[in-house]
Length: 286
Image 1 (tube, rainbow, N blue to C red):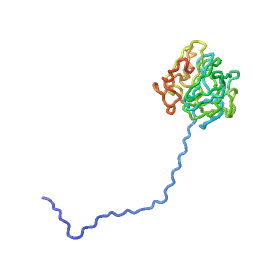
Image 2 (cartoon, helix red, strand yellow):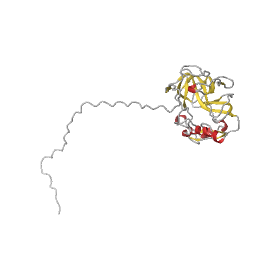
Image 3 (cartoon, rainbow, N blue to C red):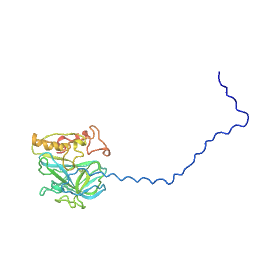
Image 4 (cartoon, rainbow, N blue to C red):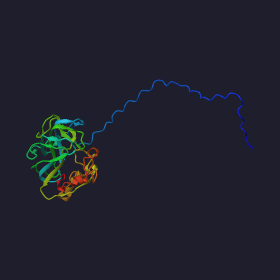
């Protein structure tokens, strides 16, 4: 048994069904767009600044300026030699004059310790693009953990947006003040690292303890200019406990072990271990 569908009754076909158009209700004026959020303010990094020297966070290019880079040696020595780097730049770098002396407070040099740094007997040098340069030997006796200022006059442009930068003391007045005991209108400015290595001629046989790691090993995010990174802490402890040991501040700082990393992609100031290893151990930073 089943049902049989009856055919439609004779006559005109029914009109197709058309759904009704829904009513349109005006929404009125659109709400005002949301205001753009204020730019995020990043706090200044931890920075040793006992004299409250003004901190300049500009990223604009500076010219005809004198900067003082603070470094610390980790072994007794009778002579020094400096390694300058222009390896991350495609343009030549002119150094008008360079001085070195023991560091006092707030960018001042200890009286009587200032020494002129020369390059093949000349007071200045033009470092080619993508190249390093070594100074002549400097007769400056130092003790382990001595702090030194390396004063550099850059007569041309100095780009502040570089792959490797540090907070350094800078003169607020244009000109060459490398030989001045104190910089005029001194300020702290994040500028490219010009001195990447200090060679020291030891006064006695010294063993070297090398640290291998990344920027954390180097002391990234520790207080700038305070020398509180892990190698620095180790250098503080070794002379008093184990005798003639030297711990370079960043003997090998590697973003990777085997291959170089492009400067624009580095997260720290380091190069690969193989690149650092191409230089003899006794030439690494002491």
